Length: 116
Image 1 (tube, rainbow, N blue to C red):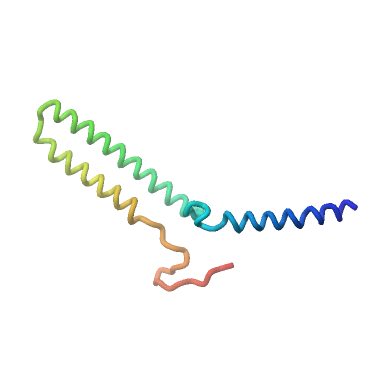
Image 2 (cartoon, rainbow, N blue to C red; image 1 turned 30 degrees about the horizontal axis):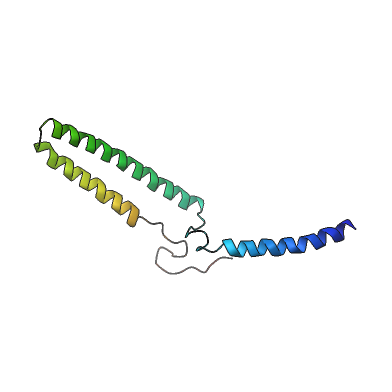
């Protein structure tokens, strides 16, 4: 009797799990997020750490700029503006262009077969 009860309960549960899995497994339902492997997660963490370090440098440059303006040292401003621009370009390149390569492409550029 216990086996029949479990078998009957298991079928709707499996159907519900399959519906839920299909509903939330698409990339649009997850807000464009992909499942990340350990390597991709480490790469994203490295990018985040680099962005934080550049933001700290930008804050230091901003503090030096305010100090230079309050001290009427206008000759130092050009160097600080250039340094801030370089930090901005590095941040822009990290955000826009440093993307992980696809696992499907080989080093020669050919597509690999999808492993199932």
